[in-house]
Image 1 (cartoon, protein in one colour):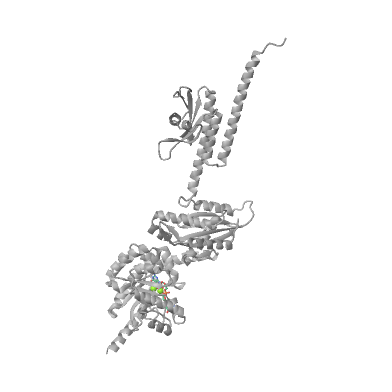
Image 2 (cartoon, rainbow, N blue to C red; image 1 turned 135 degrees about the vertical axis):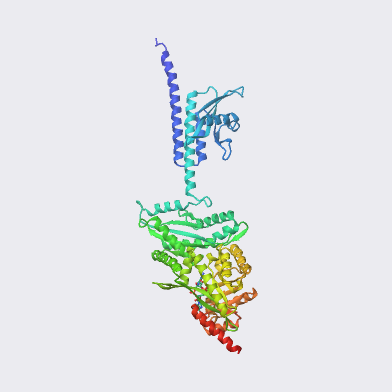
Length: 611
Ligand code: C2E
Ligand code: MG
Ligand code: MG
């Protein structure tokens, strides 16, 4: 006879099956968790991670309906962001309510839904905690009686934890991304640019190579921003960022390193390649942009600096490119400058010179010379132009073309300019006793002209020296007016209200648009010396000079020829009808004593002819 059936063996087989099933479920749970964790580590998109959480939960809870619920940004409401199971069930109010309760109570909740008479459902929900705060909920709807409660709660809690990891990771990455990127263009910011530059330069085990950076300055961006508004300004920046990116390989890094400055990092490229790329960036930015229904014309200047990896510090390379960029900006729109070591020495020299200029202003090493402006028809002076002079105790005479731009850059021009204005007006008021009707021309720099206090300072100086407004002519340059035409217009109108005259100096060397020029309330055009030099010898230059004279006449402006050096030039200018002339042939700039003698001689000549 066979052995009697072993009851205990049958129980243990059942038990074993249950155990195997449980082990199998645990194994699947572990595998799913691991796979989600790998995806988090690989920075997969957040939505994919949350979908993996809900589908994992559904599969381990015997195809339950699952919803992952988060607050709708900017509101108190909750909404499912990932669901598994029939759509009409996943966002039913029972599930959302359970999730809300899990969030507020910070624990797993369980509810019975008896709304369907055929099938009672159990809804369980677990909070998703991000940095200690319940930020969402994971809820599942299961047919009541299926599986053990304890196991279900454990599974749900485990998946809620995965969701929490994914969300924490995403928020940290988002915060890091935000801190390292510019919100307007989406480009890396200065901090990230420097960090990447550092990585490129420090070789580690990489082989030696060249690294080049370009710093791109957008010329006139401030004017565009001020005149078209900030929204258009933002659109301009984004468009510029796109244009820069379009000229580069995808491996090159573009960043917004300042308000209107962009940085480009080129690995494995030297100065030559860098300069070539800089040229294509300048060309790309020069193409007109269409913003808010208007054409916007921009230009850029680029500073280029290169080094061998491991031979430099990232900060040094950035500073070098910055120096080169500032040189390019001074040289004019569209310029590209490559950093040279002597630029550092020159900067030091400029800093010293600036210190000295400050001393000069206090110790009156500065003085004014005056150069007559002569009526070309009569040969008689109608006024003088004041020209600043600086005699340095060690360096000797420093040219105004050196110290004026320096003073302009640092703001020292405001004090210097005020001194020139006062001294010039005081002097001319004195000479007017000798030669009634004699006028004064004063050069005004951009920063000074646009200074909000400038108009009242001119007004006060005229009052102090009792000089009538029309006796003073302020010389401005085209570029200073075109830098911010709207603002210039307001300022010029206020100056005109004081009765003073306005002149455009060095006319022809800038890039004025004639339509703007007509709108500015100017009285005088001073044609730059370069045209006058060529007028006597070259037909083309003569034609240009003549055109400018005609333009001046059409706009009813007084025309002045600068830098007349020989009789032939004088003849030509007289023939084409230029009103006034200035130049070494007629009179050199003179110290006040010499001007006094010049006027004395003039008055005696006049008296002699009258007798
Ligand atoms: P600018 O206003 O165009 O002044 C005319 C310049 O041409 C002066 O140079 C003058 O000495 C020079 N010049 C006059 N006639 C002749 C000539 O026949 N041949 C040649 N080769 N040159 C001639 P300077 O004094 O060196 O001034 C250079 C520039 O510096 C001025 O150009 C002006 O832009 C600026 N500057 C001079 N004084 C002042 C000032 O007080 N304030 C400001 N903001 N700028 C000033
Ligand atoms: Mg001048
Ligand atoms: Mg001039």
